[in-house]
Length: 308
Image: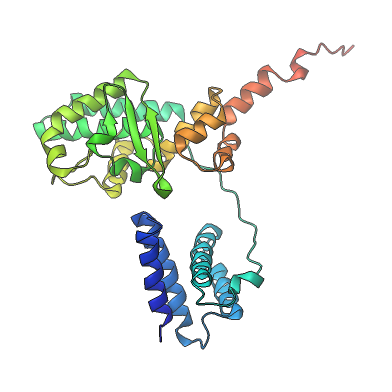
């Protein structure tokens, strides 16, 4: 007789080969479902509504709303699969109220002047490099940060770029996003193109050997953690006190475009969002644009009020 762990293993295999989920999503599913299996180790019925309900209550006690939402989604998808395979006659989620109010956290952005300072520091470090190794590192770091800010891509998307995804002559970048969705984005700045071309010329042997566009000193694919370390280092050198993450370049990309009156539907497409509601959060961040509207366009500023 199959155990819960057997069913979870079968389901994750299904997700990997039939649904073609990416490695990060699969890892999250496995973590979340293992947690439920561990929780149920002392339970006589891991498929009943009461057990699932108690588990969700326990999640709310120990995790932030965003994490709880993800773990519930993982478990709900698993039970839906069990129902689809006719292993369960009734889905425990069918009679569960799992709705809850989730705090809407605004995405953190990097101010325009800080990005300018950050990039200036990168280029200054390149000019001041005292060895060939330092120069190569600076050339690569400039290409990474310029790519992040120029395209608004996710850090995972950047690290998994392959040489064939990048056409520097047409300035097109093919990005593989969440859910195996592809999108093409163009780089419209010649300084960014020049930085990427110099990087490619400098690292061409390493790139060919590795098979990925961005490589580390061991000729392997550049990792998320390496990029985070890189950003922290240059933020310190730039004298920027704000904690900067790779994803903040993506947030800043979207917010600054909105402030330039770019239609939100274009930004949605560039970010690879499935739903416009995900992109709309940036409309709440664009304080500069809001201030410009209220200072220059509010009807009160057109009124000549007689105060005498």
